[in-house]
Length: 240
Image 1 (cartoon, rainbow, N blue to C red):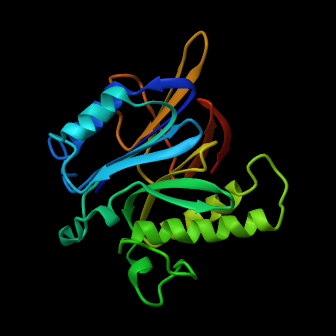
Image 2: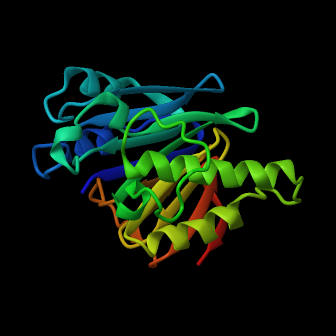
């Protein structure tokens, strides 16, 4: 049911091995054949490529996996549910503007209530381009983040606690593992299925986050309901 990959790094680096392995999970070794997307920070601007096709066997995905160099990456391979909605508008990650910057979001799981007319946690202003529960959850989070920013709340990343509370609320209606970034930090929420790996070199650190380990290294699983925030490859906040 979809897989996530994220990277936060202190220097622009490639993530060839994990991105290649994620492609194999996109229709070859796992049943996620319905789309792929790679969002990354390039010269302080979020750039995204995605397509409603299997990542396994995609020449475009393979080229990006080998060449993307960034301090921030969020990637996704998709299992469509229902399988008839295999279109680009429903393909993750999603990018939207809010509070004077661009945000990127990708989700693993399912929250049926978000598709119901009177369901919980639906965005007040319908602006979705597709028809997935994931995109609705993203817009709902952005509306609440906008409220925190408008209120001028103090703190290094003042909207994180709000996202943690809303993540737990939404997860109560289904499965809600997700990655979110404003181009500065990488926020990872592990409802029930997420892992992380921090690697340190002489000049920089980087942290990888994924649904399933994508290398032979010793990845650490998230505790259920755990939220972690990374900047420049290092963890700056943890909530559970």
